[in-house]
Length: 68
Image 1 (cartoon, rainbow, N blue to C red):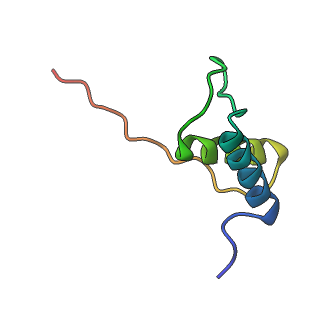
Image 2 (spheres, rainbow, N blue to C red; image 1 turned 60 degrees about the vertical axis):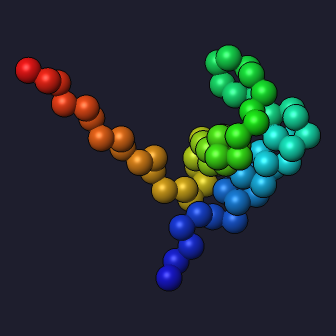
């Protein structure tokens, strides 16, 4: 089976995780420190995606239906 993520993408995630552990990883607009593991992974993947590395597309969330 083919690799889902490229090696470069894995390296980006690893870099983000190290920055999180060091306490220097910041989130987008607010610039707050990232404490969550999941958020650090998401940041690493989005950076890899921006560089054009092989990363699957983001999952679409289910839209809430209006009542009435």
